[in-house]
Image 1 (cartoon, rainbow, N blue to C red):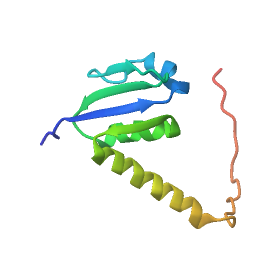
Image 2 (cartoon, rainbow, N blue to C red; image 1 turned 60 degrees about the vertical axis):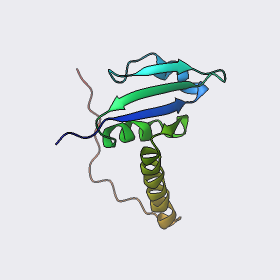
Image 3 (tube, rainbow, N blue to C red; image 1 turned 60 degrees about the horizontal axis):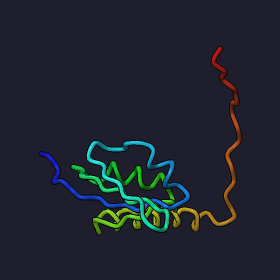
Image 4 (cartoon, one colour; image 1 turned 90 degrees about the vertical axis):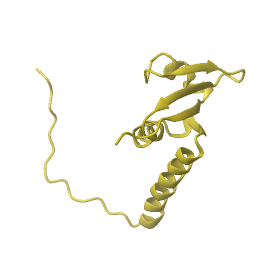
Length: 106
C-alpha cells in the first residue's frame, strides 16, 4: 500500500536559509526566498514520518506551514522530548564509563 501524497510547506529561518537553500533535499522541492530573508520550501511526499525526522533535525530553524497534521506530529514529538527532560530534573546521574577509545583512520 502506498501512502497518499502530501504537500509539505516549511519555512527556514533567515539564519539558515542560505545553507538549506544550497542543496536539493527532495526531487519535488520548490523554493521561494521571502522578503524577511527566510526560505519557503515545498515538497510532495508519500509519507510524513521521514520528512518529520528531517524537520526535527533542524530544530528551531524551521517551522511547518502545512500540512497541519505534520505540524501536530512535530509538536507532539517536541512535547514528548521536553517531558523527558522535565522528568529528569536535576537528579540525572551519568553512568560510569566502561570503555573509552579514540579511533583514527590511518
